[in-house]
Length: 99
Image (cartoon, rainbow, N blue to C red; front, side):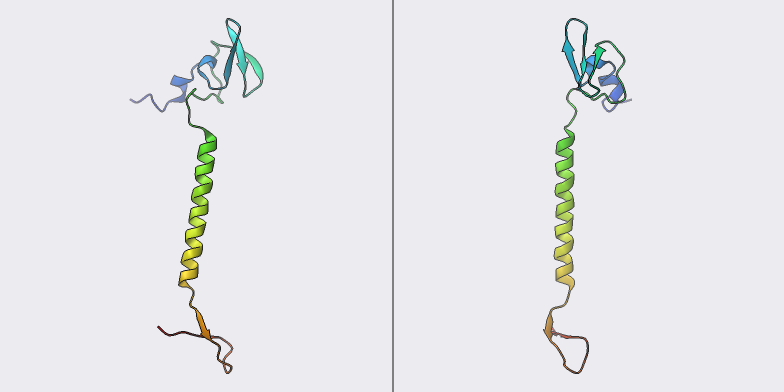
């Protein structure tokens, strides 16, 4: 049984949450909810481990991959379209260069 992926183990209380800021001896504040909390309180569903990966880096990576896929698709489509060599006055469609 692996406990590394279990958020309840690493963020079981408010004091183990990334959003917790200690203030005084026993309490602190939650930056996510903007409220005062006790360090020993059970963590809420919004709790994140203190060293969780940044969502911003995930978002940047996702956008970069989408842009890359879009670029690959446009290059592929431009490669697959035949080049127009000349138009035939007797036909409505252009004739294509033979290779």
